[in-house]
Image 1: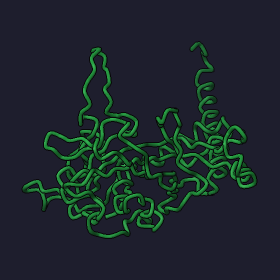
Image 2: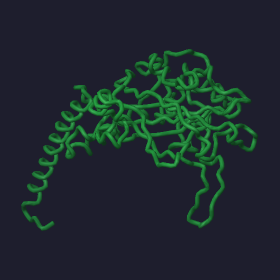
Image 3: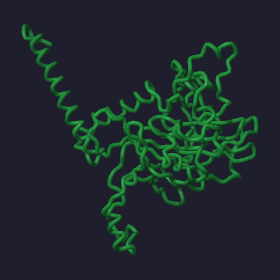
Image 4: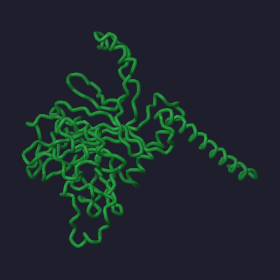
Length: 348
């Protein structure tokens, strides 16, 4: 670089400044994080999530090649959804987050757009309480929401039948994931089941990590998991001949966060998936609900049942100085990722 004899000194000085800058950034980020979450725990793993149940026209459900019912392929088939309550996970403790709610973009003409978790604006609620006749936006220019936590992950998860127990896909199936779509070859491809994947697991020394990709294996990794069949149907039991006695004891269930949350949500009655989390069925990374299979899985002749699970960071950009937010968001994502892929969501 042409620094001559001062090269090493300059490099050392620069490195020192980088370390000091990093310390300053982390200290500022911790301060901003504590202010945003209301917690002084700098190393906490925290996120927001909501489980919404799909509602669709039974006459438009699909079929696979073995005539198992599958989710509808057209977005128009999804009439509406049972919007769940928003919850906060903080170091193993799940609690309601009533200041947040699920909201969707209105595209007009009866079409719905993507959804997100948003924070309610107290000023809006106070105004509407005082002037209920002015709830329409033409009379009220106060925004309904004043904070939008960044999305972490979002998955659609369906239970179709005992013969097609759990299928998953990233994103929101009700937005037309199966619609005819073009590709680089210039041709349109018919909707098919390729957008969905049978639930798979990556095996990690007794931990089964759920995945939405065609990687891993269609059965769990450990021996005698405590959460089977409570959360994962018995069809996913590891029955590879000659390996059962050599398998490590199951140490837990983890992986893609929305998928694991959906597996728990099937213990809620239709339209009441949030009850699972309100009643603390998942606490301290342990499943404390019924040990048997989900009573609310569809039977062979029932239509599929599915959820859209949306997970956001427990951060509101509007509350955090812009110069700190990028690093703070990265730290949050790293913490969650470490829990999912190095730790466990459900022990046992």
